Image (cartoon, rainbow, N blue to C red; front, side, top):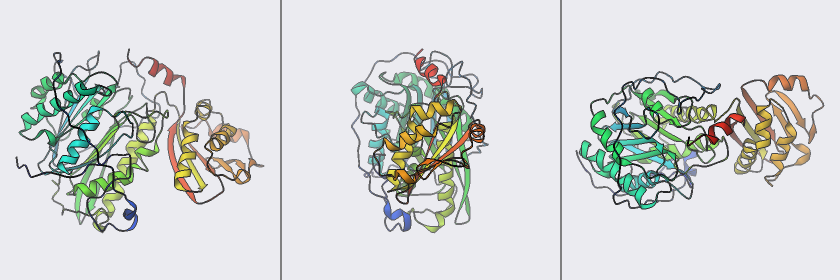
Length: 476
């Protein structure tokens, strides 16, 4: 394959996304350059034999045996092939029970990529690897993605870094490309070094199984405590040419802004520069993957990657603000929003999907902090689980943030029902109507704090006994 000289930049989620192109107008002027990070990965690590390849890769699975599918689950959409990407899954044996736990995506030459990653200060080896390679390649010439479930390869020191490097090396030899053309992601138990030999042993077994239509299999292979696979698909027009956007994600616990214990992989066959991908991914992450919380805990492994294969034949676009991208921008945000809300619908033990909206704050950042406080309050979340419209707990969650609010102008609404206004219970408060509303699976809670024009949305779920059962049994 052609190996152009590479140097450049990578971005992570600790700051707004960077733009590699210039002259982006309108809302894109606000985008700031992201901190560049990365770490050198070298070494070796002993391994054990791999499991056999899966015999029935299309059989529906939950992440663990015995998990009940979430009552909030949504079905996978039809996900036709995206030009320029092929998918294979394997069974490397990272779980005690037999299940797919390995995903490999193979991309056409010339594929560009961008990523946003966890803000966690103890990032995993695959997160470090991706940051370094996106820096080295400047987001160009990405040939493959390798994802394993069952082992996070986080807090594993040099041994974990060595395992990550060897994983990339094993696939690069089979694709005849550079190690830095391979991106990695892992999810699962923290503190266990990845047994990369299991992955290396699977690669020849799955080599002849790559398919362009294996999106559903891919979504299943990356699940951990997920109870349903998550995917989204859209088409968009760029200068009259139809392009496809397909995405899969995993995550159900340790989900909190910023991002979550989540992996998300989105592929389009549009022809976009790495700078455009980074700008758009960073911009829309703020209102999608960074606007969800299940339990307030943030993972070591959060990774969202966006790839553009260029195989649809559309004109190459190098500015995120290009008018020809208007439809694509809308559809990309729709895919990301869809995936983000599915994470909440699969929150561990969840029975309620809750959208929290805060308005009237001094700034969007203040509104987001207040909304997050409500969304993560155990008292609020358990009240929702009990179908109790206990708006006093919302008042508590608002005030404890120490953000600027006008106590005597706070208003609280559940759906269309007003619970409080002018800093007190509403004169029209109807307990029977409120109780009936709380029985719904999808709830909307709106709070106006009466001091400004800042607003924000956060998506969350309730907190039930199911959350304790799942997490108390996580390593069993």
